[in-house]
Image (tube, rainbow, N blue to C red):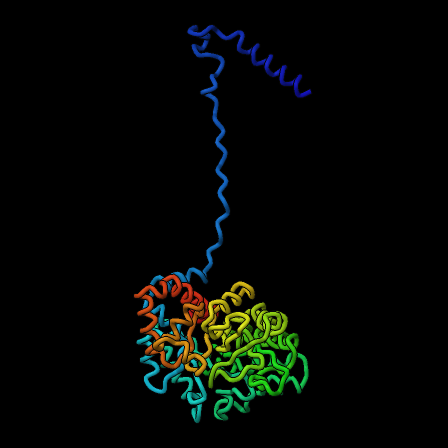
Length: 391
């Protein structure tokens, strides 16, 4: 049928043109009655452009701030320094610090007003708002609630809370801690402890839930979720899992457990915390032989690769305190911070930042560290601050 209509259309066209005058002759109107193909309108389809991504205000804020910063300012952001006893505000300004970690001495015998004023002075001195952190785990580690002027009671340990029973008890405890810390100007709690320990003899046992990996993972999920709802930063510790190792504050701890144990036990609470939205992961100083027999986890590129690639963590990676004895013999001429950044940490927790920051800048000048490494780490730190509403 289509063929018949096509032939008929051709016939009509030919019939219409047959009566047209020969080339060069004029029609009655003086113009040809048949238009040439060059006179016909040409259809030009509109180009199809790929959809443009929506602007990301978070990334725009990070990029804008990062592009305005000097190299010294970027390096300073990578230090979560132990708050010094004197000139803390001036030093935060001078070294462009990313944050201050407060300890018991920073709260001892102080009123709420005194603590708030001290923290406010640090923030006023900083061009980029500081992360202000503290270890308020509950139980044996309570920097703030150990002071009765600041809290009506000491926060209980995870094991003490578990013994009380009741749905949501960990979340409620986390909310109470977060409210107290935020009221003082503290925006990061170095919690929860995600280590798995069921042995009373383990060094880390008293700070853990004291139950198996599945129960610990549920505990971590509940705590991280509550902290995120409150708007306070969380820190999962101590990756890749402390296990039954001894105290790294006083020396080297060698973990000889097989990788399978980490994959089926120790990683589970960390993975749960990451899924729940944890902001940061703190890496221990244990030497984990199945991952890196030569370096403490905090200085091991392989341990950081596992955390980034296998656990898919994209947030801020922190070292444990580099002032611990377990690090001493690995730091070449005091360059522990350089080794930590080379390994893949985004932030360094240390007391001697006034010595470590110049060493990082020197490593950049000598090509030991690259500006791209610093930019990537600083961008993660700024992203954390953006998420906490500091930028």
